Image 1 (spheres, rainbow, N blue to C red):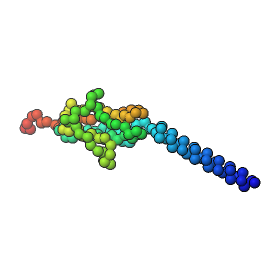
Image 2: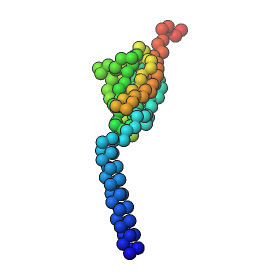
Image 3: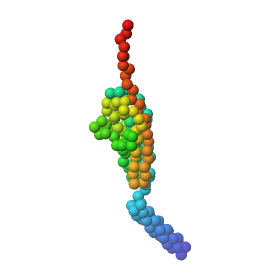
Image 4: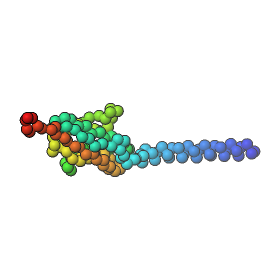
Amino acid sequence: MPDQTYSTYLYLVGAYLDIISNLTACLSDTFPSSEPPFFVRSPQNVSVLSGRDAFLDCAAGGEPSPETTWTFKGKPLDPERTSSALGQDRSGDGVTLRRVRPEDSGVYVCRATSDVGTVFARAEVYVQEAPVITARPR
């Protein structure tokens, strides 16, 4: 008789574990895991000569995957003067600033947003002008 009790016990434990497993699967479908956005790579300050291109790298992760946008002086970047670019590892949401001018100097902000949060990272671009000789040598 003890073997039958033990078998019944194992059967009930197995049934209980099946119920828990099914419930866990249902809950994970109903309430998917989420993770607020975070930066895998943040943009770095860059110094560039006027007329050259500058690259700012930014990569964000999280669940759901965040959308990344760039701003300069609080406004979206001008698509006529920028292009999206991948980072060195062929991922991320970098941006190339084309033919920079002195007025392009300043703080650029990478913003990563999802349903569960927003994070910001910033980098400063320093545009340097080539020296100009104004007097003839004697």
